[in-house]
Image 1 (tube, rainbow, N blue to C red):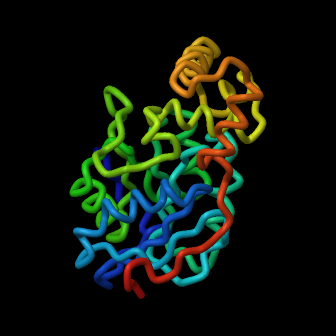
Image 2 (image 1 turned 90 degrees about the vertical axis):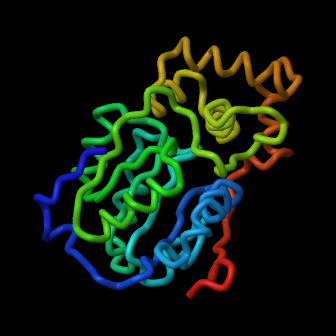
Image 3 (image 1 turned 90 degrees about the horizontal axis):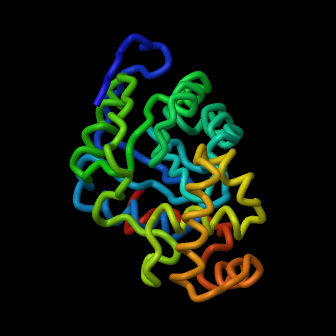
Length: 232
């Protein structure tokens, strides 16, 4: 994991403990999985709120932005979070380590770019480093496999994390070409994911895949969970 403390003005140290974190994404199940993974470290990391398509409400030390189901080349959400005065620092949490994505996130003001393959202990340590003023960018994982404890729509039906993410984008109305462009995947990779998804969920058309997605939690959520398990 690479760390660089050359930008103290952007990410100044703060001694407050535990670190208050807001989790942001479009899907409750994804965010709740991250929150549960971090629960054993409540003395170090405390989830202040979970925001699915809602603005951050409380003042927090770090916003952890989970990129599941998001067009990763669309940086509007990161920019909005960085501008939010209630968010002291913004960290992107993702599988995708395409160089352009990392550079753009940093240019927008994100203080961290962390891999979803990190074990919980390493994720907590990385968030603590960001909180202390470092710029932390994970080493790209050799294979994009989520850390134990994470969750996503379709997991119980047998979809892998990346298959579920492709289906989430399709359910939102994106074409295969859109998914390839927005998620920085090759067209052939997207086609391979789509074929596997169709087989696993037992459909033969895009329309039926979208309907299946809407019936199985792939519709983006719109709600805030405050005070996760008795948090602040």
